[in-house]
Length: 439
Image (tube, rainbow, N blue to C red):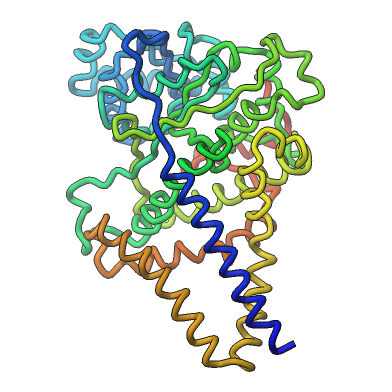
C-alpha cells in the first residue's frame, strides 16, 4: 500500500501535466478569422440589445464606444418606471447626442413591467431590425472602432450562429496603484486572465468554448433568437421549480451547440442545422468590463460558480445528455466531466498527500516543491502582466484556490437565483422567480 500512494499521487499530477500540455498545443494552433474584403455582414446589419436597470455612471461612456462601431441601432430595454430616467441620462451625457447624429445610429428605449433579464432580452430582440443581434451588457466597454467588423467575420461561414470575442478587465489609470487597487479587483483580474488560453484550446479542439460565450457581448443570427421556439425555452428555463433569470449566456451557448439534439426541435421555425460557434480572439475585438472594488465581487463569483454547475448538470444529464454532447463537442464534454469530478479528486489528493507525508516525507517534499514551482511561475507571469497589484498578489493566490470551497457552495445553493448586484433588481426578481417568465 505504501508503494501505491506515491504512484497514485504522481499519476494525478502527471495527468494534470498532460492535460495542460494538450490544451497548450491546441491553443498554439488557434487562428482568428480574417476580415473579408467584401464582407457579407456590415456593422449596419447589427442591432444592439442592452438590458439595463439601475445602470452605473459609466453607461454613457460605454454607449459612446458602441456608437463608434456604427451599428444600425441600439435598443435599451429597461423597466417602465425607469424609462424617463434612462432617456434623461442619455440626452444629458456630454457628446452623446452629437455621436448619435454623426453615426446615424437609431436609438430606442423599450420597456418591460418588471426587471427580468431574459424577458428584457426577448423584448429587445423582437424590436430588432438587423440581420445580426448583439446582446450587450450595460457595463461592456468596447475597446476599438473595429469590434463589430472583427466579430462579424466568423459569420462568413454559414454554419456559425454565435460569435464571441476576448473579454478583458478595465482598470482606470488612477487605480493602477498597489495602494489603491483592492484585493477584490486583483482576484477578478486573476480569474479573467485565465480564460483566454482556454477559449483558444476549446475552439481548436472541437469548435466549442470553455463552456460559455460571455454575455458581456455576444453576436447571433437574428432568425435564431427571434424564433418563438427558442424564446419559449429561454424564458421557461427552470431549475428545481425556480425560473432562471441568470445564466442567459450559458443557456444561449448550450442551445446553439446542442439544439439539433433536442427531441422537440421540430417545433422550431428555423431550418434544422448543426450550428457552431465563432471565437474571434483578436485585440481589435476585445470587450472590457470594470472590476468591482468591494465584496460585491464575491456575490458575483458565487453566481458564476452556481450558474456553471447548473450548466454542467443540465448539459451532461438532461439536455442534450452526455452521449449526444460528446458527438458534437468531445473535448468540451471531457473537460466538463473533469470539472464535475474536481471536488472528488480534491479529497483524494488531500488523503494521498497526508499518507505520503507519513510514509515518504522526502518524496512528498520534492513533489510539493514541484507543485509550488509551477504555481509560482504562473503567478509571476500574472505579476509581470499587472505589476501594479504589488503585495496584493495574495488575492490572486486565494482566487487560484477558490475551487476548494466554490464547488461545495454551488451544490448547497443550487436552488438560489439572482441576477444583479443592484438591490432593486434582486427585490423585484424575488417576487417572480418561482414562476416561468412570460413573453
